[in-house]
Structure formats: C-alpha cells, structure tokens
Amino acid sequence: MKKTVLSPLCSALVIPGLGQILNQDLKKGAFILMLVFVLFLGAVTKLYVIIRALVKTFKTRPDPATVMDRLGSEDLSALWILLAAFALLWLYSVVDAYRVGKKADHAAGEGPV
Image (tube, rainbow, N blue to C red; front, side):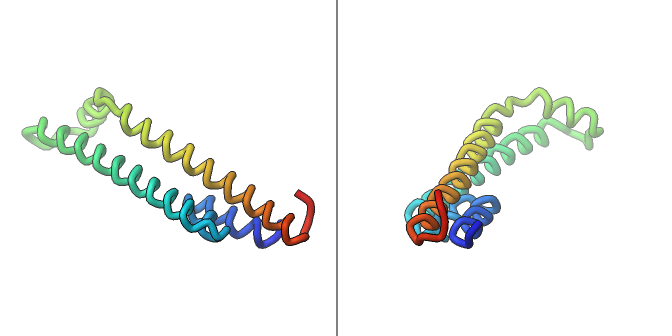
C-alpha cells in the first residue's frame, strides 16, 4: 500500500475524520470530527444524567451489587444509539479514507485500483 492510502487509512482508524483531512478533503474531515465531538458530548451528558439520578437515590453508601442492580434497571437505549451512530460514522470514515486514497494512487499512476 502506498503512502497516499496508508496514512489516511491509519489516521481514520484512530480518529474519524483525520483520514479525510489528510486526503485534502477538509470540509468532510471537519464535519466528521464535529459529529464525533457531538456524539461524545451526548454520551457524556447522558452518562452524567444517569449517574446523578442514581446517586440521588442513595441515602448512605451503597454496596456494589445494589449499584449494579440499579444500573441494570436504567434505560440505556440512548447510549446504545449514540454508540451505534459512532460506529457507523467511524466505519464510513475508514472506508472513505481508503477509497479516496486508492483514487489518489490511481490518479498519480502509482498502481491499479
């Protein structure tokens, strides 16, 4: 694999959107980075709300089994949705960085597509 494919691909695997920025697609890369940040903030906010509500229900220090039981009864569907959205965004970022890098290789005459 050539540098025009490997660098964006590895970057997209670590940070979604970075591969697009390395492929000179700044708008798409910035948009993906912004979406990742929004998803992260949403997940942190939801976790904060869940933990805060859980802490308010205890008057004394609870044992771990009680905490786990209460966490198990919480509705975590919003967190699962955020995680699924992040996974899809990450997958799109990796595939797009690879595809655009391959096109750049082919356009530069460095190898077949």
